[in-house]
Image (tube, rainbow, N blue to C red; front, side, top):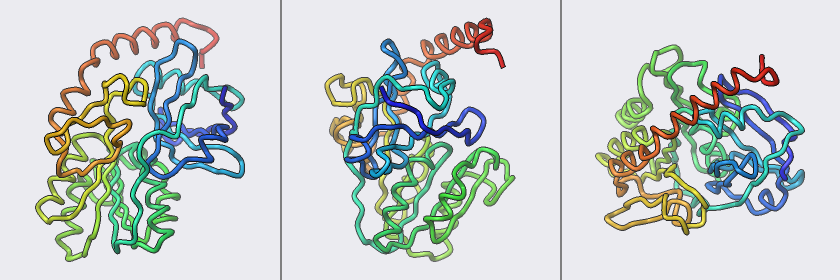
Length: 283
């Protein structure tokens, strides 16, 4: 059992947890993730480790309520427990002194980007962060991003803050300004990462993406998280989650991500109906 020692709500349906997991905290590195369950019968949910503290033995997880399982997580409070927190899993991010690194994050992708920009800043890279969301109210972790970035470009779909448009457009504009960029990191929705990779491919800028493929066990045994990279089958849980964005078959990934969409919708609707009829969860 893994105790929740802190919780805060970053935006509607987006929660940040500090969880006691000393062994995970001891081995965690940027890019690693954990597989979490809320109960014995709960679904296994992969979550990137957004931060860790080896002294307190805690890790930071950011959860966005999307389906039944993440909505269940959203109901947990300080003092409650996660049944399982397995990790750290996946390959750690390659952090090297390269010059200027641009980190592009869409939506909740800002959480897994944070440990990466922190690490790049620590070794002396010039860090430019481009962070986007539908509206300014959904731009989370703004103070943390600004703390570990040399420059920040905020982008909103509705123009309520910063660049009016998608992060890929803001990146194109930055490149067009003559800014020398040595490496790009992109984390967020699949189509967003694809759009970023399409921009950087034209300018021959090395680009790493973090793939949120469907996972079950997180060890490569189930095969659910397979992706095609440079014509070869890879497993995002053990070979990734980070890959060369110019070599990923994004169309295949999008197709696979939708395999269980109907079942997910049914489970969500049933959960919402049950919660609405239960006085113990009434607001």
